[in-house]
Image (cartoon, rainbow over all chains, first blue to last red):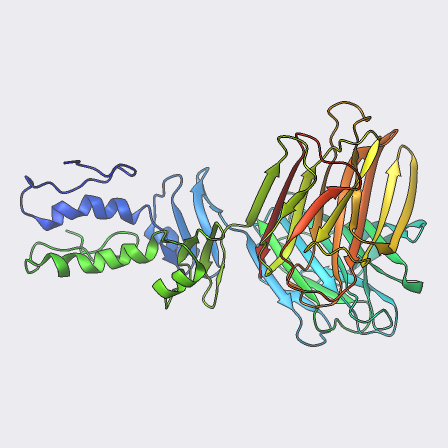
Length: 245
Length: 246
């Protein structure tokens, strides 16, 4: 009879073994123990239970709802950080706090509509709640058959395009993405990003906005606040964050 | 000797226990059972087998080829929903069906080349195979040192998402690009929107960024079809789709 399991090589008790259930089962149990999905409340509990992890070992941490794998001598995310807000009423801003400062990349998906009496409304963001004059942005706009460019320097928040607003066709929301690179502060100062956004403006003309920006302040970066330049975001607006360490 | 395992704290039988294999092994076996990777045919079978999951518990469902974890209130995707297709001969389209309706965004990546004898074909797509004239679009394009914007408003029966080389373009040249349908889960019913980037070549190198929307109130998105405005996709064209749930 086989003395070990075929995949993991865990030892199997043998009929000829001394009748001692402790020694018979311990090796097998320890093997299984280190190859399943243990669940821990936080990283400290994980590190206490697994002081010497091996490459490929896995676990789940409920505090941040993330699965980890041990590789390259550290615990790395096996599933992304994700956070979703769908507005159930009008809100002045959509806020995300406690974003892991270890994320190397962070992507924002948004579909937004404001309640201000305009066809479109500029939408803006702040990092770490900062309203200091440390935001820069540059964008290119295609609208109808026309193109234009715009820049902002030393602003107290950053533009990431425009959302549709109350005077636009009912049900029309703008949509776009923002990509941050270096959310984990690999260099001090200047967290940078780029964005792409589409929506509908004056006379029903569609627009597409391509741009980027930077935040001239040191990390760690842990929060994002999104808001229209006036008024709020209406029901059915949605922002999703997704990031990897 | 230890009475529990080091990591999961599962109870281990001890030599002083009564000689009863059932009671000796049940605690350990149940512990393993709840921390392994159970495989179920459907989500219904999963829910029947695990009526009271704990946060962090995992399961694989073969019906949708997806791994899930329980976040304390619902089963969520642990790995992204993904599908891929590569043309081993010319194909009329890339058609992805039964996509989960709950994905917050759906990303479609491509590298494409058309079979028609033109310099460029148009990349086109439909959602749920709907072909009414409700697809709008806008894009900005740079080619050589020129830049322009073009709006495709209200007359389109499919979504425009850039160009790919046709058969008269430089041999072996394929486009590369992606499309993000931002709110596939439809947090608002009317108007589903997307943005896209693509790179290709006309008479010079060409880069395009655009967006669009489907301006009608159908719902329950579960299908995407990519096709050229004329002809087929050439061998070696490839499309993959990827998304996460709420």
